[in-house]
Image 1: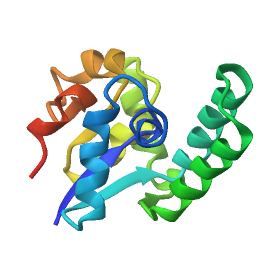
Image 2: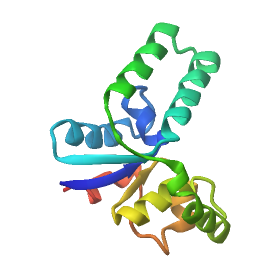
Image 3: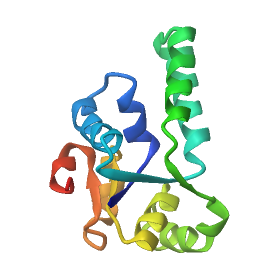
Amino acid sequence: MDKIVVDSSVVIKWFVVEPYSVEACQLLNHYQSGGLTLLAPDLIYSEVGNIVWKKQQFQGLAATDAQQVIDCFRSLNLVLTPTATLLDAAYSLAVTYNVYDAMYLALSQREQCPFITADEKLVNAVSPNFPGVVWVANVSSVMP
């Protein structure tokens, strides 16, 4: 089975309609049909929680909808990696490439699989050296 690392910028698009939600949902659908294993550092829980909180507080997401997003996300059971095991590699990558979300990049490197993100700035910063980092708009290029 193919593996793909996803970050919270992709995950939120599964539950809240945003630009590139359709592309992000291709990953989710393929995962739910058993065609993919989705990986993430365990910090994804706090990141998704923070995004949902912001959407509720500042963008009008109803409290019941916010709770439903949290519940649905939790039920997906992504394969999580403890951030402690990625810290050294992530720090090195962050310093070398001046990027923020290096935990995901480190996991992608370790697992030798693509990393899908909606963070276009991150993709632009690292893609010359990490062709496996893919902007969500181009997700079909890595789908099995």
